[in-house]
Length: 616
Image (cartoon, rainbow, N blue to C red; front, side):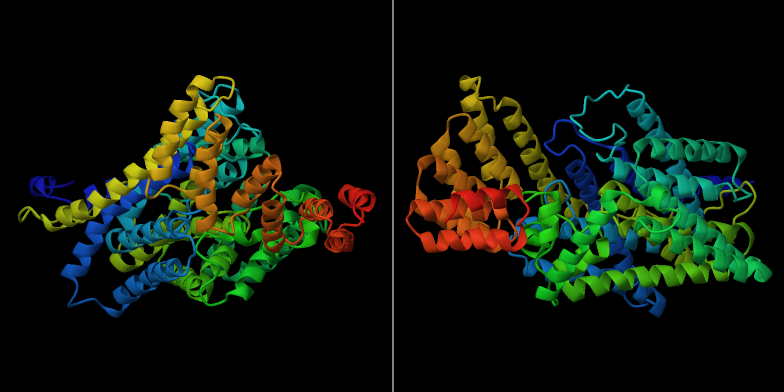
């Protein structure tokens, strides 16, 4: 029982931990239906604001410890900070700065996002002890419950938002069944492992069991196997590590069974073996094309990569012809669907190895914490590490989504924080032991630094939100059947075009809206400007060639289609159209070359048949 003096004492870090929990929960659950991208950008904005405030705590820590940072503390700071510096290094060599900064459309995995996530990890490593970690884990169960309730609303047709969604209805708050499946799996893992912590109250265990059951049901309902794979790998890891430290006689048996299960699972995902019918999905095989393209990108620029989050602008150049033939000449991808390959291909060796260094540090420290703890404390450390392993397993086959990624980075930071700040602490029965200090005066350094950093971040976030909402409303009014809306569309489009940090693709979209509303010269002018700034962008090139097709300008059509051919060498449709243009110009030699090109890699397609009939 706490004394009166303790009751009046100030827990110096409690407020900041609650702020962290609130921010992480909001990133997971929040979306904005009045944004062009209702999921990713809103979460990105909250992450930036959260990072702005927490950075004050990090700077205060560095100031107070600048003369006494121990080797372990230095390592915990140096490794994550190297990743931030690697992002900055990669950003310098990114051809389109704003894309590298804020990330690709409907992804927002640019240098700012990753730097903010790293700062969250650093904050957790310097502030979170064992008891704060328990608070974070218990809070995640509440978040999981809210998410499950919304998932039930979606699967039963009672969603309060009428999403324009061609996929499964179970998209949760992340906009995609695969993402929803992974997020639910991560929270289900935390809930499942919490059931083994004896000192957790019955109240939390009942909630954890409820989240576990509902999550598994919703994952199955989402028809995405990704979540089940995440849970399977993490649970196997948990019991293998537990047996390794506690069941010495069964260590070999558990290890052998786990290796066998993992091997059959991997084979099953590759459509081999008895688990193939359960684990294989076509979406897994298509990832092979994404991964091989990423490797080719990395080979083309191994030191600094092709540019932060610029995968989309290089994918068609490096994709295999089989992808175009199987999925369509116009289908593309803006991510490698593997976080490791994504970072190596877009940021090069420096970024890729700095990321691997963070993972190695977390894994090593997590294993040490488990090894040198016992009882509930050991189980709790194992809970954190196993859940983090679950997050990492989905990153092998998926894209970083901020609603999920925030938990992976928080868990990683918690692993470091427990080791750094909780030496010798144990979980006590039904107690929430707190670090208590007496009030010695008002500290203003952290709030001051946080405020100074947050002001430009809030201004930046405001402009982000503005181009999202302006694009949303431009789309809402862009109806050619209502020509009187052209002025409104123009006004919204100009706001996006003049926004200094607007996504280039959004500028392109609103320019197309202007053309649709009869403002052809205005829209064409803006797209020409965009093309000049980013000549690799196939969206801009494709639109421009269609525009010149309407104006019947063969010279410009030839120029743009030749540019497309360089950036998209396995596009038979583009070669066919280019062959027809050469034919109109009387260039029989080049027209014949286009036919030969098509037949060289796409002889059995409908395009090839047309080329045989129409080209010389």
